[in-house]
Image (cartoon, rainbow, N blue to C red; front, side):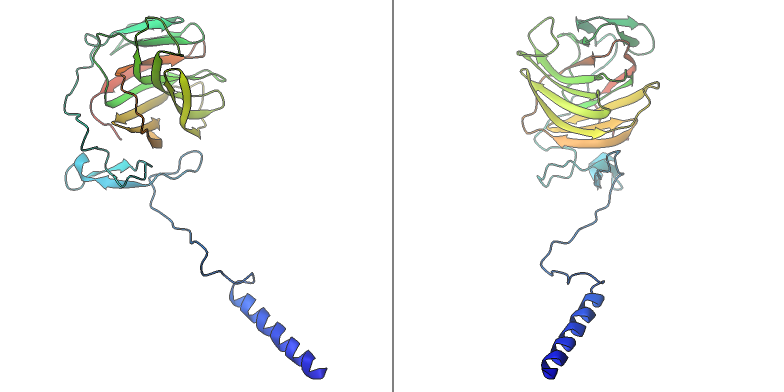
Length: 266
Protein backbone atom coordinates (compact mmCIF):
# COMPACT_ATOMS: atom_id res chain seq x y z
CA UNK A 1 0.00 0.00 0.00
CA UNK A 2 2.85 2.40 0.91
CA UNK A 3 4.49 1.79 -2.48
CA UNK A 4 1.23 2.56 -4.29
CA UNK A 5 0.84 5.84 -2.39
CA UNK A 6 4.43 6.87 -3.23
CA UNK A 7 3.92 6.11 -6.92
CA UNK A 8 0.66 8.09 -7.02
CA UNK A 9 2.33 11.03 -5.23
CA UNK A 10 5.23 11.03 -7.69
CA UNK A 11 2.83 10.92 -10.65
CA UNK A 12 0.85 13.88 -9.24
CA UNK A 13 4.00 15.98 -8.75
CA UNK A 14 5.09 15.32 -12.34
CA UNK A 15 1.67 16.38 -13.67
CA UNK A 16 1.81 19.61 -11.66
CA UNK A 17 5.30 20.34 -12.96
CA UNK A 18 4.18 19.91 -16.59
CA UNK A 19 1.15 22.16 -16.01
CA UNK A 20 3.38 24.89 -14.56
CA UNK A 21 5.71 24.64 -17.55
CA UNK A 22 2.70 25.24 -19.83
CA UNK A 23 1.54 28.36 -18.03
CA UNK A 24 -0.56 26.71 -15.36
CA UNK A 25 -3.19 25.43 -17.84
CA UNK A 26 -3.74 22.35 -19.92
CA UNK A 27 -0.89 21.13 -22.06
CA UNK A 28 -0.71 22.81 -25.49
CA UNK A 29 -1.93 20.74 -28.44
CA UNK A 30 0.88 20.88 -31.04
CA UNK A 31 -1.68 20.23 -33.81
CA UNK A 32 -3.90 23.19 -32.85
CA UNK A 33 -4.04 25.99 -35.49
CA UNK A 34 -1.85 29.00 -34.72
CA UNK A 35 -3.06 32.60 -34.97
CA UNK A 36 -1.16 34.57 -37.62
CA UNK A 37 -0.82 38.34 -37.29
CA UNK A 38 -0.79 40.33 -40.54
CA UNK A 39 0.25 43.87 -41.37
CA UNK A 40 -2.76 46.13 -41.60
CA UNK A 41 -3.87 49.38 -43.17
CA UNK A 42 -5.95 50.42 -40.21
CA UNK A 43 -8.70 48.89 -38.12
CA UNK A 44 -12.17 49.92 -39.19
CA UNK A 45 -14.74 50.97 -36.64
CA UNK A 46 -15.91 47.40 -36.23
CA UNK A 47 -12.32 46.31 -35.48
CA UNK A 48 -12.00 44.45 -38.78
CA UNK A 49 -8.46 44.68 -40.16
CA UNK A 50 -7.88 45.17 -43.87
CA UNK A 51 -4.34 44.29 -45.02
CA UNK A 52 -2.65 46.24 -47.78
CA UNK A 53 0.28 45.83 -50.08
CA UNK A 54 2.28 48.14 -52.30
CA UNK A 55 0.99 48.12 -55.88
CA UNK A 56 3.82 49.32 -58.19
CA UNK A 57 1.27 50.14 -60.91
CA UNK A 58 -0.04 52.94 -58.69
CA UNK A 59 3.03 55.15 -58.64
CA UNK A 60 6.30 53.78 -60.00
CA UNK A 61 8.84 51.65 -58.19
CA UNK A 62 7.86 52.83 -54.73
CA UNK A 63 4.18 52.35 -55.45
CA UNK A 64 1.33 53.29 -53.14
CA UNK A 65 -0.50 51.39 -50.48
CA UNK A 66 -3.74 50.04 -51.92
CA UNK A 67 -6.43 48.03 -50.18
CA UNK A 68 -6.20 44.29 -50.42
CA UNK A 69 -9.42 43.05 -51.96
CA UNK A 70 -10.71 40.12 -49.96
CA UNK A 71 -11.35 37.93 -52.98
CA UNK A 72 -9.04 34.94 -52.48
CA UNK A 73 -8.07 35.04 -56.15
CA UNK A 74 -4.39 35.75 -55.56
CA UNK A 75 -4.56 38.99 -57.53
CA UNK A 76 -3.36 41.61 -55.07
CA UNK A 77 -3.30 44.49 -57.57
CA UNK A 78 -6.22 46.81 -58.07
CA UNK A 79 -5.99 46.39 -61.83
CA UNK A 80 -7.45 43.41 -63.71
CA UNK A 81 -5.54 42.58 -66.90
CA UNK A 82 -8.74 41.73 -68.73
CA UNK A 83 -10.37 45.04 -67.87
CA UNK A 84 -9.95 48.00 -70.23
CA UNK A 85 -10.03 51.27 -68.29
CA UNK A 86 -7.95 53.31 -70.70
CA UNK A 87 -10.72 55.78 -71.63
CA UNK A 88 -10.83 58.93 -69.47
CA UNK A 89 -14.29 60.49 -69.38
CA UNK A 90 -15.07 64.18 -69.02
CA UNK A 91 -17.27 64.68 -65.93
CA UNK A 92 -18.28 68.32 -66.13
CA UNK A 93 -21.74 69.89 -65.68
CA UNK A 94 -21.88 70.13 -69.47
CA UNK A 95 -21.36 66.37 -69.81
CA UNK A 96 -23.33 65.17 -66.77
CA UNK A 97 -27.01 65.93 -66.23
CA UNK A 98 -28.85 64.79 -63.09
CA UNK A 99 -32.59 64.18 -63.28
CA UNK A 100 -35.03 63.36 -60.48
CA UNK A 101 -36.62 59.93 -61.01
CA UNK A 102 -38.44 59.62 -57.69
CA UNK A 103 -39.57 61.92 -54.90
CA UNK A 104 -38.27 65.46 -54.75
CA UNK A 105 -34.65 66.56 -54.58
CA UNK A 106 -34.12 70.32 -54.59
CA UNK A 107 -30.99 71.63 -56.29
CA UNK A 108 -28.94 74.77 -55.74
CA UNK A 109 -26.30 75.90 -58.19
CA UNK A 110 -22.77 76.14 -56.94
CA UNK A 111 -19.27 74.87 -57.59
CA UNK A 112 -19.19 71.69 -59.64
CA UNK A 113 -22.61 70.05 -59.59
CA UNK A 114 -24.01 72.26 -56.83
CA UNK A 115 -25.89 70.88 -53.82
CA UNK A 116 -29.01 68.78 -53.27
CA UNK A 117 -31.51 68.39 -50.42
CA UNK A 118 -34.10 65.60 -50.22
CA UNK A 119 -37.69 66.82 -49.94
CA UNK A 120 -39.38 63.42 -49.78
CA UNK A 121 -38.69 59.92 -48.51
CA UNK A 122 -37.04 58.07 -51.39
CA UNK A 123 -35.77 61.11 -53.26
CA UNK A 124 -33.59 59.89 -56.11
CA UNK A 125 -31.54 61.83 -58.67
CA UNK A 126 -29.50 60.03 -61.34
CA UNK A 127 -27.64 60.86 -64.50
CA UNK A 128 -29.72 60.74 -67.66
CA UNK A 129 -29.00 58.35 -70.51
CA UNK A 130 -27.02 60.98 -72.46
CA UNK A 131 -24.61 61.80 -69.64
CA UNK A 132 -20.99 60.67 -69.49
CA UNK A 133 -20.92 57.05 -68.26
CA UNK A 134 -19.21 55.83 -65.09
CA UNK A 135 -17.96 52.31 -65.87
CA UNK A 136 -14.96 52.63 -63.49
CA UNK A 137 -13.14 55.22 -61.40
CA UNK A 138 -13.95 57.16 -58.24
CA UNK A 139 -17.26 58.70 -57.16
CA UNK A 140 -17.58 60.73 -53.95
CA UNK A 141 -19.94 63.15 -52.24
CA UNK A 142 -20.28 64.98 -48.92
CA UNK A 143 -23.45 63.85 -47.15
CA UNK A 144 -25.27 65.22 -44.12
CA UNK A 145 -27.49 62.30 -43.25
CA UNK A 146 -30.66 62.09 -41.18
CA UNK A 147 -30.59 59.78 -38.11
CA UNK A 148 -32.72 56.68 -38.49
CA UNK A 149 -32.74 56.75 -42.30
CA UNK A 150 -30.69 55.42 -45.24
CA UNK A 151 -28.85 57.96 -47.39
CA UNK A 152 -25.97 57.62 -49.82
CA UNK A 153 -24.80 57.31 -53.41
CA UNK A 154 -25.68 54.96 -56.27
CA UNK A 155 -23.54 53.64 -59.14
CA UNK A 156 -23.60 50.79 -61.67
CA UNK A 157 -27.18 51.79 -62.44
CA UNK A 158 -29.11 50.39 -65.39
CA UNK A 159 -32.82 50.61 -66.23
CA UNK A 160 -35.13 51.38 -69.13
CA UNK A 161 -37.63 53.10 -66.84
CA UNK A 162 -38.06 56.87 -66.65
CA UNK A 163 -39.34 56.96 -63.06
CA UNK A 164 -38.19 54.43 -60.49
CA UNK A 165 -36.81 53.79 -57.02
CA UNK A 166 -36.18 50.06 -56.85
CA UNK A 167 -37.76 46.82 -57.99
CA UNK A 168 -37.96 44.78 -61.15
CA UNK A 169 -36.19 46.36 -64.11
CA UNK A 170 -33.80 48.39 -61.91
CA UNK A 171 -30.23 47.42 -60.97
CA UNK A 172 -27.59 49.38 -59.02
CA UNK A 173 -25.08 49.45 -56.17
CA UNK A 174 -25.98 51.59 -53.15
CA UNK A 175 -23.29 52.76 -50.68
CA UNK A 176 -24.90 54.54 -47.75
CA UNK A 177 -25.02 55.34 -44.05
CA UNK A 178 -27.95 53.31 -42.82
CA UNK A 179 -30.72 53.39 -40.25
CA UNK A 180 -28.73 51.47 -37.63
CA UNK A 181 -25.50 53.45 -37.90
CA UNK A 182 -23.68 51.22 -40.39
CA UNK A 183 -21.71 52.06 -43.52
CA UNK A 184 -23.37 49.66 -45.93
CA UNK A 185 -22.83 48.51 -49.50
CA UNK A 186 -25.87 46.85 -51.04
CA UNK A 187 -26.84 45.66 -54.49
CA UNK A 188 -30.20 45.66 -56.19
CA UNK A 189 -30.05 43.28 -59.15
CA UNK A 190 -33.28 43.54 -61.13
CA UNK A 191 -35.07 44.25 -57.87
CA UNK A 192 -33.36 41.47 -55.85
CA UNK A 193 -31.56 43.04 -52.88
CA UNK A 194 -28.37 41.68 -51.33
CA UNK A 195 -25.88 42.95 -48.76
CA UNK A 196 -22.28 42.98 -49.98
CA UNK A 197 -20.70 44.41 -46.81
CA UNK A 198 -21.64 46.46 -43.75
CA UNK A 199 -19.55 47.74 -40.84
CA UNK A 200 -20.49 49.78 -37.79
CA UNK A 201 -19.51 53.39 -38.25
CA UNK A 202 -19.99 56.04 -35.58
CA UNK A 203 -20.66 59.42 -37.16
CA UNK A 204 -21.99 62.83 -36.21
CA UNK A 205 -25.26 63.32 -38.07
CA UNK A 206 -24.91 67.08 -37.64
CA UNK A 207 -21.78 67.12 -39.77
CA UNK A 208 -21.11 66.28 -43.40
CA UNK A 209 -19.48 62.89 -44.01
CA UNK A 210 -17.56 62.17 -47.21
CA UNK A 211 -18.65 58.92 -48.91
CA UNK A 212 -16.39 57.56 -51.63
CA UNK A 213 -16.34 54.45 -53.82
CA UNK A 214 -13.47 53.28 -56.01
CA UNK A 215 -14.95 51.01 -58.65
CA UNK A 216 -12.82 48.87 -60.96
CA UNK A 217 -14.07 45.78 -62.72
CA UNK A 218 -15.42 43.41 -60.09
CA UNK A 219 -13.71 45.27 -57.26
CA UNK A 220 -15.25 47.96 -55.07
CA UNK A 221 -13.50 49.89 -52.29
CA UNK A 222 -15.65 51.93 -49.90
CA UNK A 223 -14.41 54.89 -47.86
CA UNK A 224 -15.92 57.28 -45.31
CA UNK A 225 -14.01 60.47 -44.62
CA UNK A 226 -11.15 59.09 -46.71
CA UNK A 227 -10.73 56.04 -44.47
CA UNK A 228 -11.05 52.65 -46.11
CA UNK A 229 -13.82 50.74 -44.34
CA UNK A 230 -13.98 47.70 -46.57
CA UNK A 231 -13.33 46.30 -50.03
CA UNK A 232 -15.31 43.63 -51.84
CA UNK A 233 -15.27 41.64 -55.05
CA UNK A 234 -18.56 41.01 -56.84
CA UNK A 235 -18.31 38.01 -59.17
CA UNK A 236 -21.62 39.00 -60.77
CA UNK A 237 -20.78 42.64 -61.30
CA UNK A 238 -23.46 44.99 -62.58
CA UNK A 239 -22.75 46.53 -65.97
CA UNK A 240 -24.75 49.76 -65.63
CA UNK A 241 -22.88 53.05 -66.04
CA UNK A 242 -25.30 55.62 -64.60
CA UNK A 243 -24.90 57.06 -61.10
CA UNK A 244 -26.69 59.30 -58.64
CA UNK A 245 -27.84 60.16 -55.11
CA UNK A 246 -30.52 58.29 -53.17
CA UNK A 247 -32.01 59.68 -49.93
CA UNK A 248 -34.52 57.89 -47.71
CA UNK A 249 -34.51 60.74 -45.16
CA UNK A 250 -36.26 64.07 -45.69
CA UNK A 251 -33.67 66.80 -45.31
CA UNK A 252 -30.63 64.69 -46.22
CA UNK A 253 -28.17 67.07 -47.89
CA UNK A 254 -25.47 66.49 -50.50
CA UNK A 255 -22.66 68.70 -51.77
CA UNK A 256 -19.24 68.46 -53.44
CA UNK A 257 -20.17 65.70 -55.87
CA UNK A 258 -16.93 64.55 -57.50
CA UNK A 259 -16.30 61.92 -60.14
CA UNK A 260 -13.26 60.83 -62.12
CA UNK A 261 -12.07 57.92 -64.24
CA UNK A 262 -8.98 57.69 -62.01
CA UNK A 263 -8.66 55.52 -58.88
CA UNK A 264 -8.32 57.86 -55.91
CA UNK A 265 -7.24 55.58 -53.07
CA UNK A 266 -5.97 58.33 -50.75
